[in-house]
Image (tube, rainbow, N blue to C red; front, side):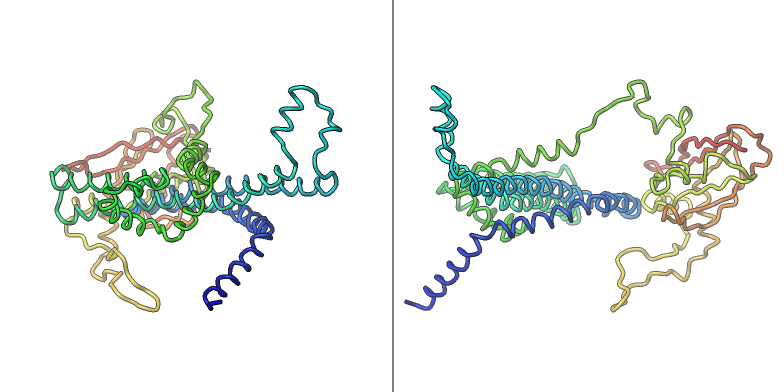
Length: 441
């Protein structure tokens, strides 16, 4: 026997041995995965709060929504699929235990008659066949879980590559609407759809003789950007099985079903206003009060400490949001030196790029940033609010903070309104802010 044949024989024997006991590994891994997925639900949900906060700091951060939501769909899909697998494997174990006690089904003891006896004997030829069928479902469902996960991640990779492709066209000077740009974008969309159709049709395009010459480079390219080498053997080994083919075709409906489940809402409170956040004159908005909202303060809105103010000073915080604010600051203070040189820098084992701008004057920065805000209480404009730079410990944001004197106000309900000076098209205009209601005690 040749050495490679002996090696192949040993490998096959080893794999056969592991295969017989794979159910134990499946249960251990499934239990561990379920534990990790359930434990990670809350931290993963909190991650989006940080992404949303960063989206006000730089334009590129908004693209993090694609990997976040793609992985979120894959996350929930894997959790549901693994739980289903554990259920099936538990059912399989229960049948093994029952078989050790009761053996096969004795239809003579059941004493079913007529059509019932004929139907049951045909439906359940033997208890062993039922156990074998369950074993097939369990083994395939476990592999299918990972294929479903990788398929959803691959979809996200294609969407991300499309955004990157359109961004590169813009960098090359091709604006939206130009014939060449429209042609290239349309071609990319068609190629991605061909790859998708080939995947869900179990390789239909690969079986068409003359299409292969055109489709092969498309197949290789999208296989590369979707990391297909990780799951391609799993995919092809699954679709050569009858049940596996059925499940592979169901990847799209299952993915859509998960998205629908994640999006389900039950609407109640029929007579509440449909757009409560905009009705600031008729509503208390909890996210404006730091002691109530805690970590749920709206990141792009001003806030005060509490609904009830017991002192003669109203603490007010207005956040600094680089994306909407920087352009306005450049317009109203064109000569102003920024405090930081923004962008990607290296600090640590390697240091590269200047961060602190030593030419910046903190007082000039403050004077310019004050011009972005107009504060009024009960429709009375406060002309000189003593704002200072502030790093808010609860909101984890930089901005401006002021203690506004309110000793002249009576012990009653009042509101503070903070309007923002912002760039709109080619002009800078004042935009009305929300009402933040408070009681002076």
